[in-house]
Length: 176
Length: 120
Image (cartoon, rainbow over all chains, first blue to last red; front, side, top):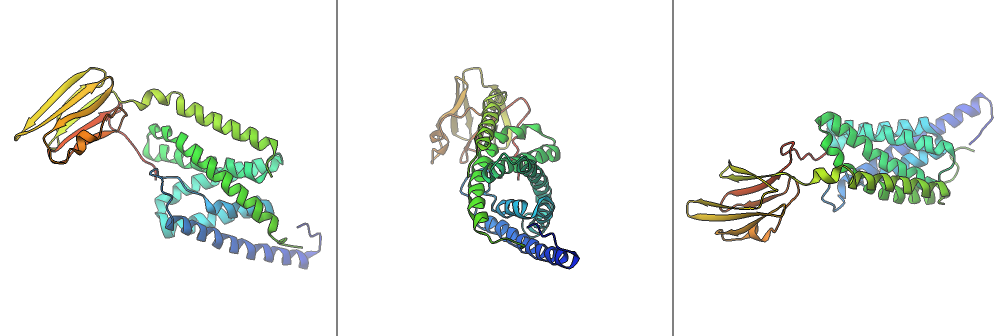
């Protein structure tokens, strides 16, 4: 990770990270697609496994906030245009940005494991979407829906966190 | 894999969730009024707090709606399928009983009207 080399080696590293970012964005997009294909049999909208977050967390741990943030934005724009429409994109942006900022702050304290970070991310993702819904629909009554989304975000966040932990350990180093 | 801080965070989130679930929202969950609709027109609005029996007769069909202890049920109906009668009691805002053959709809409304929004 920490290559202290001079300019040519450094640009090598950047190219490598760029390629990995592109791969990650594509992977996150595929995960978004898989989620559209397999609806979870719960009669409440907004409950998702958040598979794409798996990629984002690993990007956050391995490449840092800026890369993870960019990958997430690329995924949201692409997935929004392909699946959920522009209106859905607004919700995704709110959820995605809030969750990644919270995850980054928790990650930086170094007190939490991947599971804790992912858990908070899942909850914040739902919170961001719900707050957006309140603003867009001008109705605060929707907040009563938060308790359902809080627990679903919690559970899916924990599952994704465990998965991310297991996968991240097995990934080879991105740059030597 | 799981650190102490994770557990604390989990407890905090769960606590926040429970407070939100059982806090002020518990009061809002129950509706206050019962709206009965017949042939797309409002037949009447009744208070959920008052026990009463409403009998609707139209074109030879009869529906009996009973409001009791803050719940509403379709006591009897002359329709064929009896889905409305089997629906049982409702008490929450946004809940409804529909008798399609007789075109009778019983809905529970809160103070803020029938707003029941689902976020995408």
